[in-house]
Image (cartoon, rainbow, N blue to C red; front, side, top):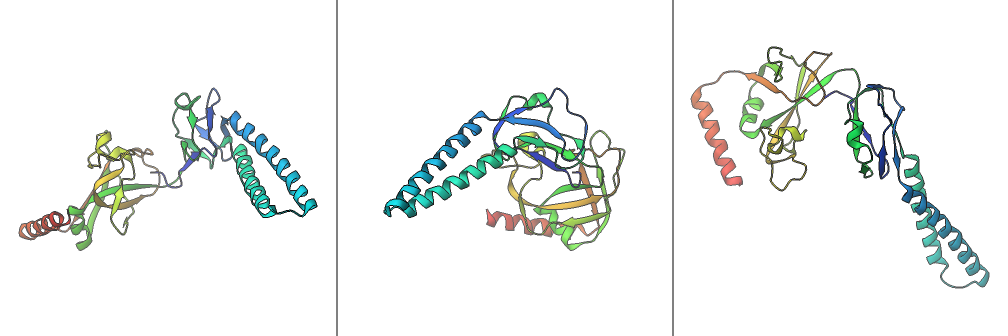
Length: 258
């Protein structure tokens, strides 16, 4: 993953309308697409008319000093809040780049004339800078990492296995994780990690794991945002008997936790 990469999110529901071409390099605040939602404008007009009606009813109640003013005030507040929310969504019908960088979103033709919901990601912007590699570590291998010092670190990628990327620092995220950093690592995407069958996103794992974050400084040739690879962490050697004992202990613990 590129550090500081940012998603372009839909701030309102609507139909995506891309221009004919989207530049590869984009600037922060640049307009790249619009959302079309005629129903939003109609709902705003209805609520504005409702506001006028409620105001007239409220003034009539004040003139007659009748009951029900509290209920009318509550309805006026609710209508005003909903109207303000919809007007804010109208402002978000323009999709603008959150920060400058390279546009790595889906091709415009894949989203063109598609309906998206509020909060849905349309694409991603990758700025120039450093990178981080998120590695999934199984529970069986975590004991060696926690109990021993890491001697060497290296990352390799399929297709460029001859080039090894050397991380500058490593951090193990405290606590066990249940959701993969990318669906590409799960079984539904032909990845190596077994996931739960009733998981729509393909990211929830069948067993908890530990997440290892490896920071990479500078720009290296095999680094592409979203690419999967393998991190190799070398620890101090230890006797086979101790390794077998640890494996047996973990197998027993796992058996009784199931």
